[in-house]
Length: 265
Image 1 (tube, one colour):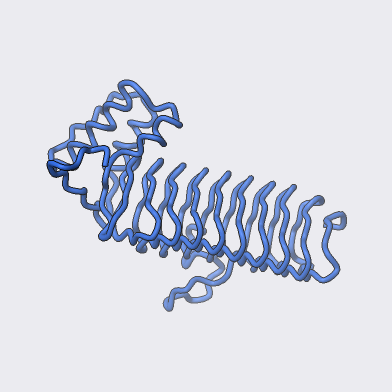
Image 2: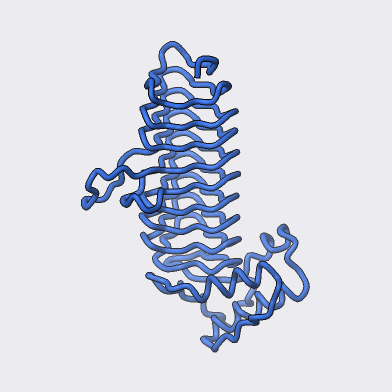
């Protein structure tokens, strides 16, 4: 901590543990019981509350607030935490709140991008390479899986799940789970199609793509799905596991296709 570059106007508690090359900008505040890994930059006026673990090479911009107490009236001041991975970008005024229970911290993975004013509430579990665009708000206990993208000003109801590679349109309210590999839009929010661009960028093609498409169409038609339990494809294994998990909110409805629409719409 002696070698960390701390601006003279910043306040860093003596109990904070900063890697030697951490940079702390003007008027930032870092409380006790904070751990910050190497290569991380803390911008001006950022506030990092106690019980925050932050990994390496994160860019934490101006006015970000991390580790504040959960906005839950039942919270009893337990020693709960947030954990943030590596190589994340947290833009201006984004916020992440501590968990409500000591068993599991609020988590943000690695290589994520939180744009300005994004909010991750208590007990959320956000995986790697997730993008939350401007003013996205995740309610408590939301699960967002790998490489999901959530459009600006979208709100996600507490306890919802957002599957891997899902893409949520901007300005919607997600009240139920969003399928992996899907696109969700509209008022009320509905599944519209597969996230074909995201699948292509991820290199998901051939038989794997066709099976994902089959599952999507079967769910839309309310048909029974028979999982291929012998599949060794990691994307299919993940999809079947996701579908088998118990949901507290249920699945988002599907957009109805009429004679003027195709499944691409």
